[in-house]
Length: 104
Image (cartoon, rainbow, N blue to C red; front, side, top):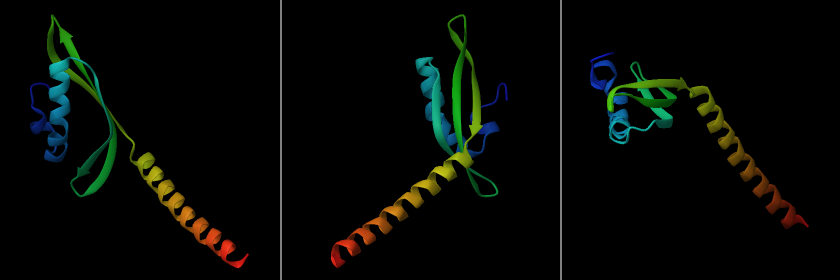
């Protein structure tokens, strides 16, 4: 990847989503964390990543960006399922509460 732009080594979906973060790291010279970064691959499959970018500075110049991605798709899906179950339980409890109040 050395010497290549993000558009040359990454799919367009990822490249367009990362450009602003890359520009920010280059401008501020500070590390950047992207949590729950969505990535749609080809063939179509939605994945989620936590991505970390750190500028490599030599003699006051940013010469590279060091990046690491962690696939958190299973965690993201588990959290979504928990939220859905919580909402469903809240609805059941509301119905049960109304039924108890009505019959007492």
